[in-house]
Image (cartoon, rainbow, N blue to C red):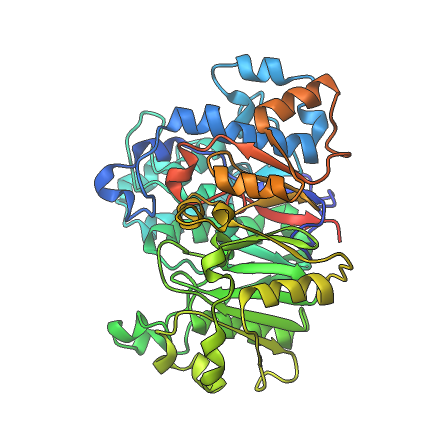
Length: 482
């Protein structure tokens, strides 16, 4: 690991040109999810791993490389696709693409495990939470660092023996943390199935040289004071629990952060984040968006994401909710008695936290971000899931029509299966092109990532959509152009 490398960490918008991100390709653990445990491990269904990898996610990686690190892939697609071993995608293999811009967290994990002290600490931590026997602890010490990284993630050894549960949700890198300007907010997962993910992420962020320059900028959310003295039923209550996942956090402008309060992110955690960020002068404005605690929505990035400075995609049935909120006292918003309220938006500014501004609906908030925070002079446009046509809005939101990753302003990646939403994009003047076709055009030199504008790139998604997360969920941007 080269300590001298300069790795930029800075995200201050959702659509600035993407320069570096963390991902995780589907690993062998996903092929071991069984029906009886699928929902416990936060999957909707079991998946066919080979199809998910070769037919779907590999296109995602190739697109990211073409946009962020083209030297790693240009002119090599035929060779890459012909390799049955997929070694190009596997950290630690001889042919691994090994990019400093499209970075698999498994690679970083393998690299920090090369240090014996880090290896001892992390192995002890994992064995502790997984209640491993002493013999398993000893067995783990026999593997090389990159194989050990695979075991920590997949839960299984090369001989297919399972030591502990897989981490199928690690492909959704957004949830382990979020970059807010030059700081990284670490998550606190809501479900026990993701506890090991959180520990692996902590070790990577605190021990890998990529993050050495901003180690003092890593933000951890404190638990409720004396939480260990609370009765179990109170610990689980929305007001006392401290949980936060990255899908509920968006850095939409240098001075403005959005935090969703959902089934995965608690009001208490949102309060703690707001307190820390205001005290450290990291942002000046935080908007809390309280959404229904439903599996349908999960995080705020499942109901809206930004496409370009003045364009958003969102779920129409939630777009104009919140009108009744003005009838309630704002002080009730953060109180236990208010946890059943379905939808509400409050905006807090540093220095006047006790006088939040109530925002009537989601469209009003997003329009304000485009015009006031980002200075857009073009009319703000909304593209609706399912073209806002019943029942396609809800159907396609379920398969991540609103969960898009912007590679740059106006160029996004999403799933190919959401036909009505794609038609809505066409109506707004966007070009729809499949990942496979676009990569062929890139290889032929007839199209270029630099000149692409107003484009929706479609990924195959039959298996990926079973996991309940889209391209936004599958990315953790760590560097964007301002």
